[in-house]
Amino acid sequence: MSLDEYILELRHISKTFPGVVALKNVNMRVRRGEVHALLGENGAGKSTLIKILSGYHQPDKGGEILINGNPVAFRNPKDAMDASIHTIYQELTLCPHMTVAENIVLDKQDQFKGFMQKKREYQAIAAQALEDLGQHEIDPNRLVKDLSIGQQQVVEIAKAVTSKAKIVLMDEPTSSISQNDADRLMDIIRGLRASGVAVIYISHRLHEIGGIADRITVLRDGELVGTVNKDDVSEKELITMMVGRELLKVYPKREVPIGDVVLKVEKLASGELLKGISFDVHKGEIFGIGGLIGSRRSELLETLFGMRQITAGKISLNGKEFHPNNPRQAIKHKIAFVTEDRKKSGLVLCLPVYENINLVNVQQPSFAGYLDWSKFKAIANTHRNTLNIRVSSIEQIMSSLSGGNQQKVALAKWLDFSPEVIIFDEPTRGIDIGAKTEIYSIMGELAARGAAIVMVSSELPELISVADRIMVIQDGRMKGIVSKEEASQELVMSLATQKTQQPVYTSTGGDRP
Image 1 (cartoon, rainbow, N blue to C red):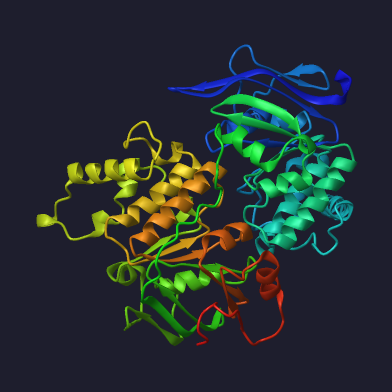
Image 2: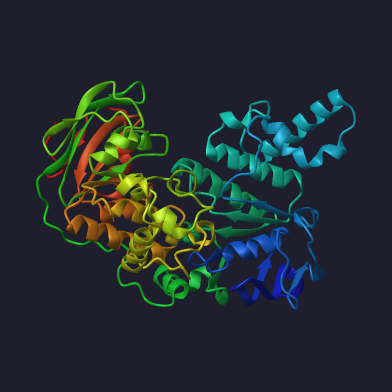
């Protein structure tokens, strides 16, 4: 491989923030027309490296970026875009109330003269970009807010295509989309590779990496561990490179005696969203809920927590009927809810760790109306140690924590009132493999203490390995309940996509309601 085949080179890239070394002497080369995966645990330095390539940060003195063998310096994101680098972030940067076409040409407005001519030209450009990506079903005149997340990602890629990007950076592109959209995205990425575009791909889903990457670079604690060819390394070896140790069990499952029924749901409905859903969850059980994105799994959890109105059916807790009208009632009845989006609905990122851990505690009645912050700090330190939350201090601001540690804090805030039912919505979304394993172990410990756990997950290996039983729903309707012994990815997917109305039960998947 001659040097001129490398479109991008990073030499001795370091980045230091006050009190934190984010990157230290990282070297990396990316070839034309390759998909180059960038892996590492949360806090490994991946995001910092991407922001340096995007022009948001500048490397420390001594670091060098070369494109096509020529040194470049980015003072801002526009410099990076002018150098044919386009970044697609996990949280998309589209304007929702503008059309697809308007978004695609948003950074190219100075190319058009005259209003009507402008409109015709940018619609033609957008239509051509979507056609080049094989996405004929997306109407250029449609508002972005009316598209699915997967379709919005296609629009982001179309922006890169029309900008003639030679390097595309993708940060967790499949974290919030369905499997069908993920498969479609992989086809688009292969098309970009075939056209000579270099794609730097960040994901915590190792099975995706094996299916799309040509080479893989691993970072750990801000330093380069190594770059390997995909075909020369196993998934187990990648995990060891990422965490610095061998994980004997990626999906630890603690065997816990299953007790009496704690939560019972009978023919539950919520308007047109949910119809006739019935299941029960026992003490010590992890009850999984599967289905495609859009199947209304989250809506079911929100109904259990009093965030959505119950229009039919009933819920029972420990044999007594329970009708939650709001989350406060659910909390009063010992129900906890670790939400899907910890940043928007689980945490207050501008507050310190100890205040986030006590978000539920501060709502409880206090002596004479005074809050005992010394007590709350002691509680925070206890959970910090018990859950192995890695922070320099409990006064550290929440936004500075890695995704895995943020998720532990989102869980810790619920533990002090000893919940009997704990609801997890995508408990390991956006966190690295080491943090995932810790979350599974924590869930097992909570089940061993007698909690009844309800867990939604889009990752089938996770769902099948961790849950004792799995209920599959589709379009707000139950399609079946299967036991751990008989669960498989094929069975869960067939239930998630089946067209029949009669629910399916395996022999030990639970009593028919």
